[in-house]
Image 1 (cartoon, rainbow, N blue to C red):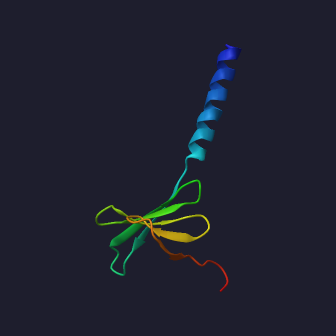
Image 2: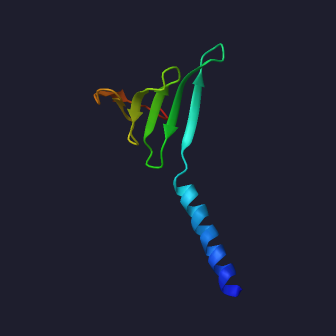
Amino acid sequence: MMILRRTFSFAAVLVALATGAHAQQQRTIYDHSGKAISRSVTDTQGTTVTYDAGTGRAVTRETRDGTIYSAQSGRTLGKAVRGKR
């Protein structure tokens, strides 16, 4: 019985760690009337992909260093500025 409890506890810890490692941050952007216009998802690597809310297609991809790329062509669109200017 003691071995079964330890195995179960160990399995529960592994499941908790695995779910935390795959957590994503999601955000929805709304216009002035309250309609969703885009959604963005940031993965555990820090890459943010923004999707058009109407079509569901990826529009941009932003890497951890702030470089923004077109999701369709892969071309660099610019650099995000955060913090003090």
